Every structure is written in structure tokens, then in C-alpha cells.
Image (cartoon, rainbow, N blue to C red; front, side):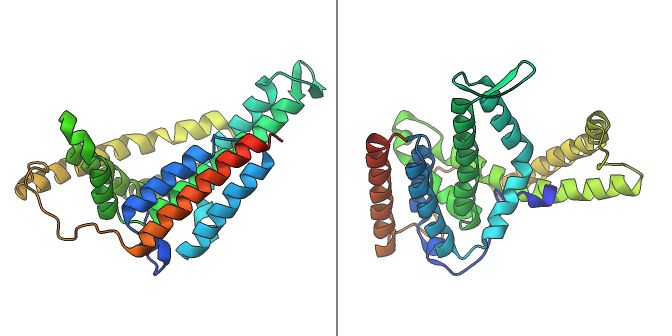
Length: 268
């Protein structure tokens, strides 16, 4: 299960999406996420799926690799579906005991599940095709207007980049700890939910200790290299827009316009 988490990991490949400016990918991802909540119709989701499928094909990242990340949120996905089916009022469809599944609840559950799945896969396209360093530079560039309000833009971008880069490290560390505990007789496949939760307690303590130790080592390394924030710092590779970046911006604008039109015209 731990190995199935793909968010925050980079998949090297030679594709159009990989070569795009990271600022374009961040803006396009934000547009994609916003579009997921702009409509409540199957036609709208068809446009979203088509747009996402095009991005995945252009990224040359295997679809099976992106879908792996959904296994980590399977329980959250199922819980969301069940809550929406049982808590949404409307015309009864199925009833058993005191629980009632309504047509509106069933429809809402399907839409919420689709939104979560598309949200995870869409975000994975950005992180799988962009290195943490490029993400840091892009976020700092996009947040640059906030410097007028004395916001620590460089520090915010650096923290987000470090958080993303720590995800695969902590996943690998968790996997090592789990294997060590299994060698000592720990059972992580027990069908009893309470026993399974208790078996994860010996993982959390060493994982937190390891995370704090790595954070301390990182802080010491940054101080040893005389890091004092973003004031006066230069970049080895400055971000510059290319022709393909402007084309990508145009496609993103056309996509959001299509979604807005569909959300206003179609309601089913």
C-alpha cells in the first residue's frame, strides 16, 4: 500500500508535458481543479476526462502508474460515497432498516467519487512531470506579486518544495520500518480492524523520529551552505516561456471556456 503512493514523485520521460514551463503546468492544474466543481452533469465530466486523457497521452507516463496512487485513498473514496448516498435527501431508491439510499444521493455519490479520482490523477500529472526544483522556481515566480505585501515568497515556495521532496523519502522509510516490524512478527494483514490499527503504532514512533532527524540534518546542511533566504539569490536556470507554453495556455483557456459553457447549458 505504501509503495502505491505516487503524489510527489517524478517520472522521467521525454514528452511535451515534461518540457513545458512549470508555471504553465501549475496554472493548468489549478484551472483543472476549479473546473471539477463548476458543473453537475455527465457531459461536463466527459469533457474533463477527454482533457485529462489528452494530457496523460502527451506526458508519456503509463496510465497504470497514475492509477496506483488511487489505492492509497480507496478507504476515503468509499467513505465519501457511502456518506453521500445515505445523507443526501431526496426520492427513495433503496431502503433497508433505517437507512435509505435516494436517487439524488446515488447521483451525488457518483459525482463526488469522479471528482476525487480526477483530482488525484490530474494533480499527479503535474508532480510526475515536474521536478521539485522546477516546482519551487515556478511557485516563487507565480507568487512574486505578493512581495509587495512583504510576504516571504521564496521561503513559502521552498517549504512547499521540501514537503513534496520528503514524500518519497518518508514512503521509503515507512516501507523499511514495516519490513523490520514484520520480521519481528508484526501482522499488518489482520482482518480485525482494531488489531490492524494497533499494529501500525510501532511504525509511527520511529517514523516521526526519523522525520525529525532528517529535518534537523537538512537544516544543518542549509546553514553550512550559508542559506539565508531568497534575498539576493540568483538561479542557474531562469524560467523562460517558449512557443509551446503559450499554446498550452491557449488550450487551458479554451478548456475552461468549454467547461463554463457546458455548465450553463447542460444540467443533466
